[in-house]
Length: 84
Image (cartoon, rainbow, N blue to C red):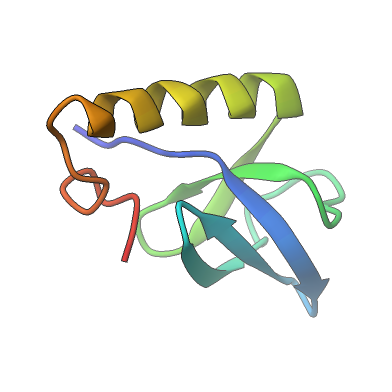
């Protein structure tokens, strides 16, 4: 099973975006995106580092809060692949 946590865009340049999610910062490719991406957007990212979908901020924040609650109930964000 693949779990994609919404990642917030902190920078965009040359077909790449720098994103942050649960403290994990990474550079991802925008090659698969068919729409413009801007700082502040939330993206879903495939294994391999390709962003594939933009998510509305309210939906992204809701999903992140649910994931945060799950980790507080005995999980670890690293186990979910959500943090470094």
